[in-house]
Image (cartoon, rainbow, N blue to C red; front, side, top):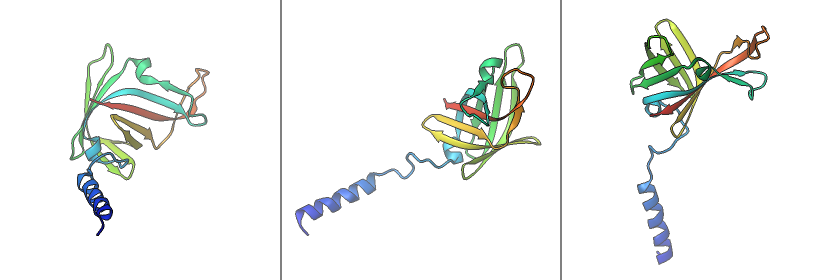
Length: 149
């Protein structure tokens, strides 16, 4: 084997040996979601034009913290000015990129993406909300943006 071939083989082995198979990944998993997250935005987004949204978190003065364990148990704490804190126990599971959040008999499904310290949930089901204050409701979806602590 020539010196050049030997060095190329050695370089390939070194890169493979030093690579971290648990490093950055686009795959959503409980392992990547585990930890404590703070809600930075709670938006209602117009289905017909996703550039139009309302940030309910800011409008209501709402804050929330979500702690997810590796086994899927979760605790959500909601705070709103003038109201006592609300703490909800839940269970989170992930199938592909879809999250199921179940608290008691209520459930919520969202498409999840994680990039760095930001996790975004986009509701699977739409609802209706008066986005422009004209008394008529428009079809919207919820988008929650979480920041890792």
